[in-house]
Length: 147
Image (cartoon, rainbow, N blue to C red; front, side, top):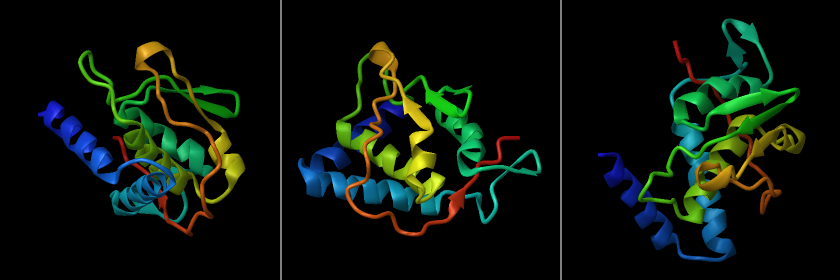
């Protein structure tokens, strides 16, 4: 079943095409995905304590399969959940994840820069840490309850 969803993501990326317009649309898909994700809260919390948006995102990143590791004030994403032995996601799929993460951490560029994406060999996360193409809209914070 996972392979079918990976192919669906490839089809979406292929349909978007290439270039800046395709990238902007992929970022928007990621932002919309974040808006639709259950568990959106006004104040991010972990175990009942108020935390910053990046810290609140760590449990969700783990559930998604990014294998996040905290290193000081930085969260390192050590894995791509969509890479399999026979499949590597299209670049625009990574851009959709980038849009999701940017929406979740909020409009502060410094917060997004706390996320580090390591292309750790063939299995590493390929999301870039470049600045967004256009200004981020105000979006809600997403928090995953991973009890």
